[in-house]
Length: 339
Image 1 (spheres, rainbow, N blue to C red):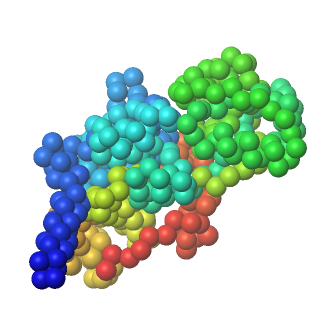
Image 2: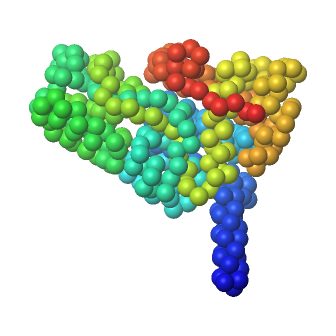
Image 3: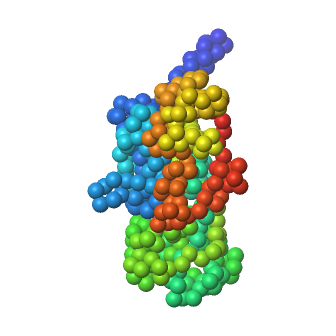
């Protein structure tokens, strides 16, 4: 009996050591190589999109940069891997990327069956439809018999099937693996409708030959909470990515911006002091320096800054905050406190 109990104790200890090792693996690997390998889209304006010099910008890109700022104190220590919808999860599972920040919907099956964890929601979205203005269609309920372009390997195909079946409408799917293939097919008239997340429709419309000749219909047919994804079994990295987003949201709520963060370091507000690292050791809790959130805000900005810069009303996408506003302003963005 004593031998059995000793064996069990040793097994539990070994398991604990193995888990502890797994939990630190990604952060240790990232620090060792000197950069964050971030999986992004193949080009979605406003979210993750390269310019002609290969410089990436967007809401999802800023999250990658914020993670790098937290880890290294340098938001530029990121390398980007463009991924199609079909290959994105495999790339994360295999370790090709450290984090997936690529307009990816949080669903139950993805959260439970792929060995992955969603680390938050940096954009609340919903699936919509885009059509040519010349079709004179005002509602998605007028789309019976339409051919619909979309991506394979996404939630959009199931959402379309559910919507058209629920409304007793017929349709034909024209699917492609790469987002640019979908845009090209729709632009060339190979289908009547383009469907994806509504934010994606506004972004992809900018790539069309004549963007002004296309409209996004009012219906939103699904819930699409989009956010960063990491591998399961690595709680330290999971916590770091999660609290990177929370830091940006909390900063907005406190009114801390990239422009005033240095002045805010002198505040006596205890919540801001904990966020910026002048009080407590909260950075140490996630394996980084206690100035982690200061570096995020100084180099990338708070959530409002990155939203407005990439997709807001003053950008070509002209997206209002809507449900992505702070909870205190009627939106859904809500971050737990640093304490």
